[in-house]
Length: 372
Ligand code: MG
Image (cartoon, rainbow, N blue to C red; front, side):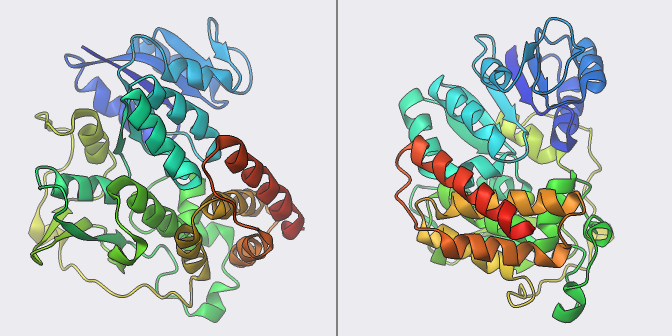
């Protein structure tokens, strides 16, 4: 039996994870669950899954729990846990990822922000502690499935697909007046509000380019993005001989979650809709409109600049998204806020966690000021 901790169990990836785990009780045991503040749902999940450790970051009302931010690290390093599913949203997931990797655990990572913020430190923690990172993000799961079994050094290029979000074909001038409500209406994926807004600005795709750089060790010039509105082809891997493999399927998070738990093996599972190429087609591909979605280029540039730049990009975006969801910032202003913060930033090498966290704090203050 493999012990699993699910951090962020009440969110979209968290609830999908528990659904997958419930189908495989003979293989996996839910040891620890944590949530931000959804105490009632967390209690119900813990009862149903029989979790020994329950952690609530904010709030009260769950008996026998770990409380506060510390509960994330406690759950992630629990002695009975082998796999930590990190489904926390945003920078708050970083300490738990680092702690789990240092303790030699597998981290099934949905929390891409932590790899963006501190990719080198996360990789170093995995090397030193003997832990490993397996992506849950559907594009990276697709690429991992394509390259598993391939000889080292034969991967030449990644092609990540993007649905294009709700504003894929909107002219730039109409986009400037888009509302949050329109941005939250994603055409193909049902997800939490933060990642849905990130998909509408294409910040999510920039974060995924940076994530791909760290996960697969390729330079930014070797990572491309193509818009694919049907979200059927999740990712492609091009090899040195020019051959390209793709992973396809109807959009569901349950498959990448299951694969992250079992990689490089596969478990028999009938829980998701079987693929039907005729029902899925026709499949189309188009270039990403960089001019209409300037936040994408800002993010990729931050990735190329390296050091603290990706952490600053991520922090500025998190603040802008929060302000936007709270009605304090117009959706169309998110890229301006990110651009202003990045422009004011002096990039530092990110070899030390204190430097990364200081850059993150600095960027949050700057972004708050830019939002008002
Ligand atoms: Mg994704």
